[in-house]
Length: 628
Image (cartoon, rainbow, N blue to C red; front, side):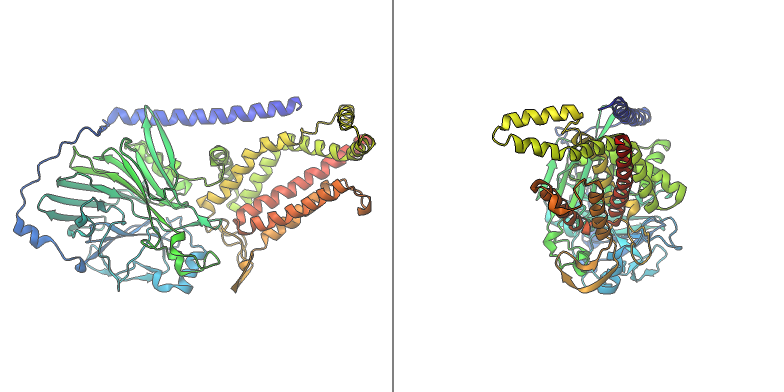
């Protein structure tokens, strides 16, 4: 490796270290600033004292409890959310996010293919809200077709009303069965808040939900306050079960939580459980239940207990709307889309839990706005940006590189207003950054190909003396100044950047629903669709994706350009024939592999190969000039 390459690697490593150090110091400063004005109470498992249940008039209680068949629905709306509440459980049964439109200009949610297919194939499951709901002014909101994205899984309709609320957002659960069907009365209702109350002989429960005073500072957020006067043992608050989002054909579900260690906040990712992941010793700063592009965050501000739980819910209990359409180009079963639910426990020493609930898209602009205003308003630092999930096989390696590349991509988007063009420009920047390594690798591989006939001649000459042949080949390498392993090292060094870009283009919300070429590439986070048909064809499915074939053709061109094989195939050696066959097989494999990958990822890979072709041509030309 030459001096310029070493200096380049040291510069890149130092830059990433300084960026990470700066972010860590900033998070610690935010935390110290918050601690100056807030006292954080940590409840240990030993604190188990319970308040005596208040005296309750039994006659009044019986009159306040409504039969579950008389469920009533209420709705709160703002520029970011349509939230439907049920009197059963006093919980949230729908969180509907409006699509970006002239009616909702502040929304960042765009419709995608699955939304359009719902309108065509299953309109009765695409009504918002699913049932008639009462507004604060007494008017009734009737279901409307195709205006929202349903963040929560919905398994009730006007004909099949809700009878229990075990998996709804902000529902209360406990080992006692009556919690799942406890009837609440609406006691207060305005255009920005609603309050419910339920009475039992041993407890009184009040729930208050309200939008922030300035929703633009805390978009997609709601303030929740739950008061339990009486027995609070083993009472948990639920996140609800997010709807399924597919990323490269598979579910993007992800679970996270944040803990405070000293002045530092650490975010931990939870492997998706088959049944339950629970902790009785950790008090999370917040918990996050995500489907990849969207999520629900329960962020306790006061009154939460020690512990947390993430539960897997069978898909048959919380069916996904994708079951009603052929979005996966086949008919999936309910069990292929299990749901996941987060829970936080109620405090044993405080009767009121206060929390902020975020329910919306994991868009960079949305999460950064909340994080910034949480600090300036002297509220609890949120760090919701950490909820953005990277789903690659090597996410622990790719995440810092993906964040760096996304920062570049955002800057290009601000300049040119096109995410597709930003992908291409980031690809160019990445090629420029890695030019020394690519050049070194290409020159090394080219030199190896040029001396291949000499190596073959030595091996033929000393066929019966393998040790002598090896020594002669090594001497040839020294004479020609060729290192057989030098072409591999640059590729290994580039892998974190390549994996980071790969992961970024699969996981970024900003690309979801973003078009590039109308009628062909309508969504950069999903495969391009040139045209479709009604029947399923193996490998192709029911749609023709053109970009993977362009990728395969480009890869074949690149391999032929970098090859030094004789023009006459009859002059090829057996090893050269095997190399050509392996190259052709890899072209076919990559075409099949990328067939279901997002259009943005295909655009990146095609752009990268075209730039590689240009660099290979230039390298070959320089080497030819030196020989002459």
